Image (cartoon, one colour):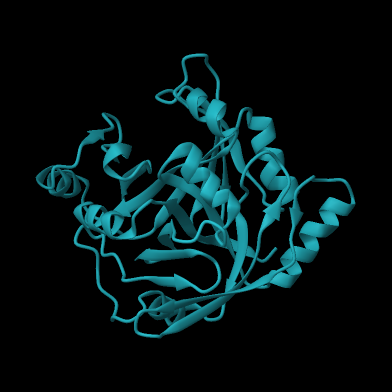
Length: 294
């Protein structure tokens, strides 16, 4: 398997400048980003130790990814989807297609496409990606960049040298991915993407959900499904069917993070058990961000 890690998470926003300013209040360093030629979109990035968050906006509805346009129209700003990083995209696409041909999954990896971003300073970085079709909603896609490790990280910063985050954000610890049932979620990633879960099923009392975990070389997936009519996950399922609902990020000091965010006027809640900090989605342009100690 060459699907190795969570590469990045896409956060759909209506206005990039306003989104960048808001995310700076959350203690992130936000890059100047760039535009995707002939794709109808532009972005700003939050570059982390492993992976990144992509604030993405549509500037040409006729050229942009139709699902992204539809997401903004129907759901407003917030978490859209995410990308799995691949070290051999062609091999991963071939394995995906083999599982589809054998009837193991209804998901289908599409033909890899070349992608490019151009910064305002005319710097370029490229990648190849394969979107995944089938199912009922937008699926995580596969991506392989034209560089790796530190060279890739430097390219992500674009026109300016790397900068640290004021709040000390480290990496994407895990993604919360919600499904109507745990069986559906496990089959989706096992049969479609070839991933393997670890450990036994457990219960999250605060979300009234059953969950399992899929570890990756960088980060992990928490697949969770509501187990009660009163579960807060039910609203997501009724609106989105399935998809990424939350991003868990590491910080060095939870008390310091809480104090910093409060000083910026950001509304938060704290877990009475772990001390994790959850940012009010209304203050993160619809994205559910949870901070844990690194």
